Amino acid sequence: MIDPLDARLVQIVLRAEGSLVQLLLCALVHDAALRLRALSGGKPTGIKLCIGHPWEFFAIAKAMLATGITPDFIVIDGSEGGTGAAPAEFSDHVGVPMQEGLLLVHNTLIGIGVRDRVRLGASGKIITAFDIARTLAIGADWCNSARGFMFALGCLQAQTCHTGYCPTGITTQDPIRQRALVVPDKADRVFNFHRNTVRALGELLAAAGLSHPRELRPHHIVHRVSPTEVRLLSAMLPQMQPADLLGDAPGRLRHPVFELWWNRVAANDFALRGTA
Image 1: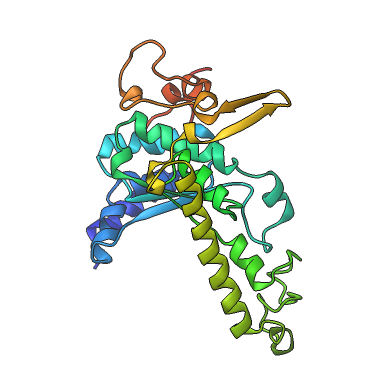
Image 2 (image 1 turned 90 degrees about the vertical axis):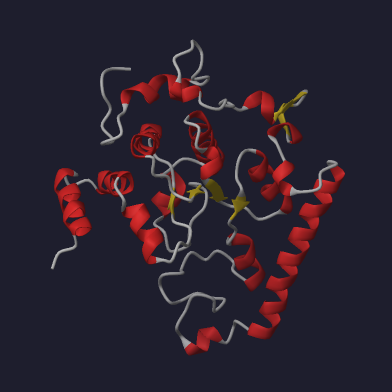
């Protein structure tokens, strides 16, 4: 017997015009998220993506508004992240960098009034305590980090993860090559890297007079823009105000990306409408 929900999802697929990204959107705007929560016993349900065209995420945001369904979390992958198994052209040229992608999602969720319902994670060459502090300051609720831990294991970025010929024994099934990975030694290195990174983050917070990472804001980060000038990130980055995207006040969109694309997408697909 076909589950009625499955039948609806089949209809969604048929209407998705063969596009995988449209399929993702359609699955989100219907009750796939609700079903995943139910099947997992109420565990948090979310999505992980690298932002491409900004209007594609705007369409997802409008679908959230249309259905009232939001994921519990969204993880933003930066284009600068990735695995040594990825094609070089993808690693170098595909996707939006983490800061810009995170800002887009963070501001969009604030603008539609659901930021308090969706937690944001971020990843993409996050290695040091300052990387974590900066990422939390611009809108993330937490950070994912793999690269630093891989370095602690001994990764030297040979970019052969998918070949089985990893020279340091990390990503291989070859018993001879695996001998290069001395687990007791590397376990201590990974533990120490994690402990000292978290400790360094605590020291940065204390130096800023803060007691918790959630208190970090853009004005805590200063960026040098020229040999003679520094600026606060709060003065450089767009900051949407709650429900800005729901009204029609002049200047409410606050940034050219929203001005250009927000009003040209709808909740049911990713296609742009009208002219810029």
